[in-house]
Length: 411
Ligand code: C2E
Ligand code: CA
Ligand code: CA
Image 1 (cartoon, rainbow, N blue to C red):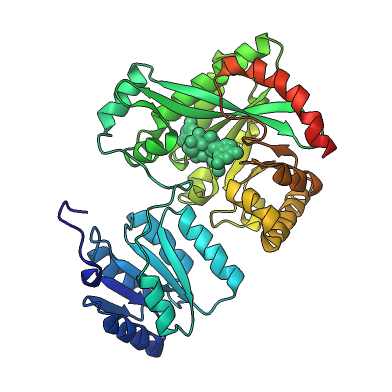
Image 2: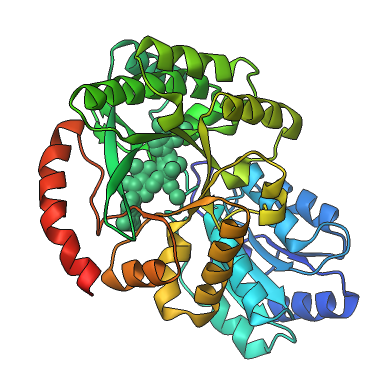
């Protein structure tokens, strides 16, 4: 927004994108009848995208047909996310419920403000009811960007130079035996004025500002020095670190990883790098180069947030990943949704065929735990097992887990 008051509902710009001229005319007409004065309709996706861009910052409303010949709805949403589209999105579609649900999940994962989906043909009353709803906030999904207004590059640079960044570790256990096998390293920022900041509030900014390589360097230091401390204490753990696509753009990244591990006497075979699936393919050639070299160094590579992005398992077959990390939205909805359970099951089966190790994140309930165990998922991570914690908290957690897990196993 540009600081002025938000437009009244009827003055909001509305963009309708549908390749069927009849549907387009009907929707445009219905919107005008509902009192909207700034409605533009487009039968071509690219033209629609340009119209949306022209309304950037004005809380536009976009009605988007999923099935389009030039740029389909999924590609369109990806582009909206890249543009940082701040308006509301309504999908208009004749597709099967499952496809629509998948599209809605994807929109939310992209951090888009998804209002709802309307089935074609659109009934006047359904549209009117939708338009009466209060505005939706941006979702707090994996990619929702909560960058605070005071954030800038020199803040991040100071954090790096003053050592304000620290790591928490979240335990991972095997589902079959409850064995404590590893941790995921999660970055936090102890800000002198704003308290402890979670990564959603600064990682997206760092990505935009090109500061991710420095952050990753720090996280690798924190993770590998901690691995060394655990090794000394007789605790052999796998340590996972989140990396960004930007890291893989640097052809020397694999050497940096190896050099850091060596300096700390850390084992590359127990280092896992988690890469977010949706950001995977931006620069395929360089990424494949870096990923290939990391695998040659025996670093494990995990596809993070699997189930929210756009890559398919068959695409993964050609990349040297050895672990699939199922997104928590996948995990948390599965016990109550037979369709998702079915997808989860076939994903786990395919992962097995491709010899990928499987980790489920965001396990919060016994139902989720049991389902994952029954479906043969290898490892679980989530609040049910343990929250992210300081390294010093792990021994107490471990002792407590040893007493807690038999009850889970007994069901
Ligand atoms: P992620 O890789 O998907 O990490 C898992 C997130 O889910 C963590 O949030 C974790 O605290 C949270 N979580 C774990 N178990 C549960 C659960 O049972 N229920 C729920 N609701 N949440 C759970 P966190 O620490 O806020 O991290 C958010 C994201 O920030 C991470 O998502 C990751 O993409 C990114 N991130 C974290 N650390 C780093 C880092 O060092 N470098 C980079 N590039 N990104 C990082
Ligand atoms: Ca992760
Ligand atoms: Ca995730």
